Amino acid sequence: MNPTVSSSSVVRDPDVAATAMMTKRAWWLVGLNILVPGSAQVLAGSRRFGRFALGTTLLFWALAVVVILTLLIGREAVLPVLAQPVVLWALAVVLGLYGVLWIVCALDTLRLTRLPRVDRRARAAVSTLAIVALLATGGVAIGAASAAGITAGVLAKLNSNTIDITGPNGKPIAVGPLTGPVNILLVGSDSGGGNPAYGVRGEALNDVTILIHLSPVSKSVTAMSIPRDLYVPQAACGSKPAGGLARFNTALARGGLNCVVAAAAQLTGLPIQYAAEIQFDGVVAMSDAVGGVPVCLASAINDPYTGLNITAGQHTLQGADALAFLRTRHGLSTGSDLQRISNQQVFLSSLMRTVKSSETLGNPVKVIALAQAASEHMQLSTQLAQISTMVSMAIALRGIPLARIAFVQYPSTPVTVRGQSVTRPDTAAAATLIAAIAADQAVATQTLGGAAVSSGTPGAGAGTAATPSPSATPTVAAPVTLPPVISGQAAAQSTCSTGQTG
Image (cartoon, rainbow, N blue to C red; front, side, top):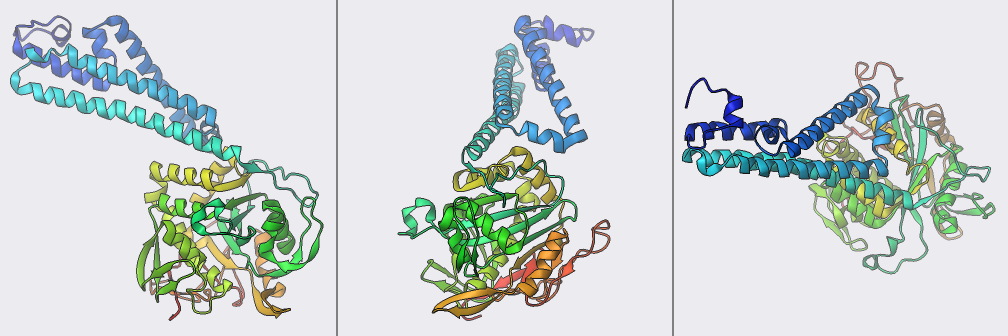
C-alpha cells in the first residue's frame, strides 16, 4: 500500500485486493460509527442514508446538550416538565427510534468493512468491537426508551386513581408548587386491598396514621405517628357530621381518606395539604423495590397472628416479612399498639437510611420500582399525584440530613373506657410537639419508644437527641428537644427492636 494514500482515500476508494488497506479501512469505519453514527455511511456507503443518520445524530446530540444545560440551570423548574407522561412517551419514542437507527448503522457499517478482505487476525477484533458498540449504543438508547415508557405508564396510573381532600371549609385543598413547609398524611389501611391471602377482613381501619411535616426551609422532617386507639371526638368530614368519642382508627371506615385527614387536622390543629393511603401489598412491593430493609432485633419475635418468626440479630426484611414486622404487636413484650409504633419507627428509620443511600436513589431500576409499587397499591390525593409536587418533595428530602428526620409518637396514656382499652391524648405534652411543627422547627426526642433499644452503634444511644453538627447545617436552627414523655428517634439513630423476651 502506498504510504502517501490518505485516510480519506482508504475509506472512500480502497484497493480491495490490499489486505492491509482493507484492514485499516475496517478500523476506520467501525471507529467512525462509534463516534458519530451515520458518518461511515456518508464516507463509504449510501450517502442519502448516511446524511439522514448523521443529521439525526447531530440533532439528537444538540437536544441532549440543551436538556443537560437547562437541567443545570433550572433543575427544579425543568424536571416536572420532563416528567409529564406525554413528554416521557415522546422521549420513549425518540430514544427508541434513535436506538434502532444506531443498530442499523452499526450493522450496515459491519457490512461496509467487507470482513472477508480484512486481515484474518483482525477480523475477530473488528467484529467484536462493532458488536460491542452496537449493544452499548443501541442497547442503552432502547433501554432508556423502555424506562421512559414504563415511567410514563406508572405516572399515568398514579394520576388515574386520586382523591380530592377537603379543608375545614369543605372545599378541595388547592396547593401550589412546593416552596415552603407542607404536611402530608400517610394512612396504612388494614383492609388487605382485597387480597384473599390476608384472610377475611372487617371494615377498613386506618391502623397506621403518620403525619409528616416536610420542610425545605428548616431542612427537617417530623413524622408523627398517631396511635390507632387514641380516644378522640370524631371530626366532621364530607357529609358526615361531627360525632362522639371513638378510636382514631375508625376514621377511614367512617368516610375514607378524607375523614382521616379531617380527624388528624382536628387533633393537631395543623393544615394538611397532601394525603396518601397504602395497602398491605404496597408495603410488600416497596420493601422489595429497595432490595429489603436492614433491621436489628435485640431479641426474637414470634407472632403467630402475623406469621412472623425471626431470631435475634441482624436481618434484611422484605416482602411478607417486612409487612409482618410492621404489623406485629403480639410479638412484642406488651403486645400494645404503642409498642408497635415504636417497632415501626425502628423499621422506618432504617428504611429512610436505605432510601437516602446512593444505592437506592442512584439506581434508576429501584426508583422506577418504587414508583410502580406506589401506582399499584396507593391512592394519592389529587395534588400529591402531580409530577411537580413529587419531584419537588424528592429534591427537598434529598437535601435533609438524616439527623434532622425525626420519627415521633403522639403522646397518650392507656386507659380503659367502658371495658375498652384505649389511650387518652396527653394534650399538654403534645402542645410542644405541635407548636414546633407549626413553627417549622426540627425536633429531637430524649426517649426511645417502648420496643426500641440502642444498637450499640456509637452516637446512637437511647435518650440521645441526634442533632447535626453546626458545620453540617449552618443556616438552620437547632432542633427543639421534646419532653421525655414523647418517644421516638432520628433516622440517623441505629436501634434494635425487642421481642417477647426483650
